[in-house]
Length: 243
Image (cartoon, rainbow, N blue to C red; front, side):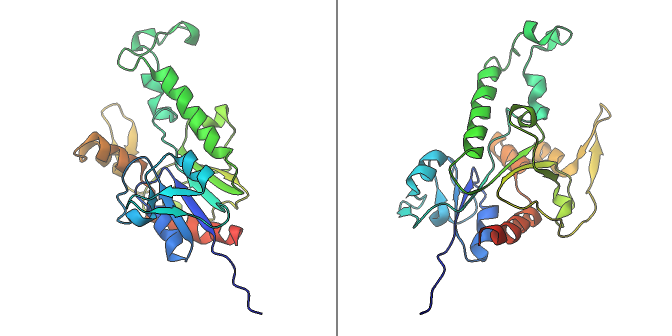
């Protein structure tokens, strides 16, 4: 008697671009993206525009195209990209009042432009941890270098787009549960950098996100994008772990 293996269910959390989702779809997996924002990847029929934890618990919900879909079985793998605004080291300078930089941390006042930064960071940490501890067998949580190395634990590995064929430098931390470390597929140059007036050097693609974006929303999307080579590596390598 011929037995057909069930198709594995993949959930890409906090992904409106659908970059990773589409790579799993190419390999024949039942993959869906999920974000509270509308998808920009061109496939609303694969996108849950709902709270991620409702989608996890209910094993589906209302898709962006208005149809309802529930998976058969369980979520086999979740790759999560929680927002990094309040977790990345690059945002630390907005946490305390600039006039208090020489004071002990406990004596510093909140930044005048961002008085709710402490609560926002607390909420972001809780969101990250809830994703990392979700009841799914295989999990990968992605974020830039930030406070989760101390608030949670050190990442399983740190990779860059130039490990996978894209000439760009972007330190990407991966916290992995029942997944293999990502193996580099095509090591290339680190890409172009520009030097700021302060003397600090940053990747040109990251600088372009600030100078060329026409809105704050576009700027955020450009800064948080998953590069194509890394998305392909995630799909091809981690799919072997769940089969």
